[in-house]
Image (cartoon, rainbow, N blue to C red; front, side, top):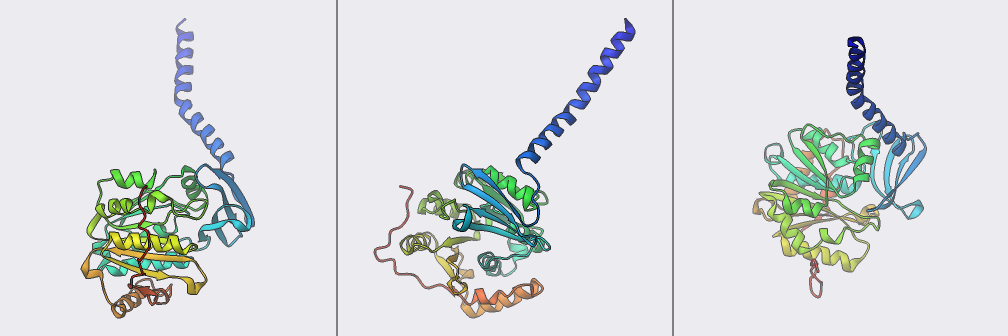
Length: 311
């Protein structure tokens, strides 16, 4: 009887100890089935309730994230498989100029909030050159976060955290004061979600900024009326708004840098000088002055232009 009891006890102990490993194995197989490995010169498509068809494209040299299918799709992110922290898009490179509005970014920029995960290119760049910065990255779509982790080498830790949450709700509830907020969120229609465009939203963003904080926004100008309303809404929310229109690169992107700190309202010559210093800091890997020269602080005519509200 004692021998049988011992055998039963050992069997139960074995099952208890092996159960977590078995669950982990099942979970891993399920995940591999949902997100299979991608081969060079191939593509994988997924269905998102937030972004419709989402496709990962690998051409052997670059890997891209696309919303929509076929020629009508819009590339949202792209990485160089041999140099994953290298920025490839004009608008992301232009966005990095936000750091030069701080005289000493290594000391002044401690916390960054990003709305929109994509392929994680910008957080990877920031952590490469400013490892001391803490980044909170928010995206409403759990599929995009999974794809970023599986196919775009996005890893949390060392001051980088991802939240699967509505960006606006996150801003409404977070208590952190951020030195930089980067808004780069688009849906399947390549439009910024309405709740992230209104003056009420921008007032919430402003309330989460540190006293000398800035907001960097990526816009798409494919409808002049909507674009003018977006810019007017930002100008109604912030004391200063710098615009960078990237049409000379045959792109519809416009980058806005918005802030209230008087010390950041520097002239174009000083801005270009700092851009040159920033290039040196980045070991001349990028030509950033070609974006800096596009800086415009002039106001678009707001006559008859509607400010965007929640309702």
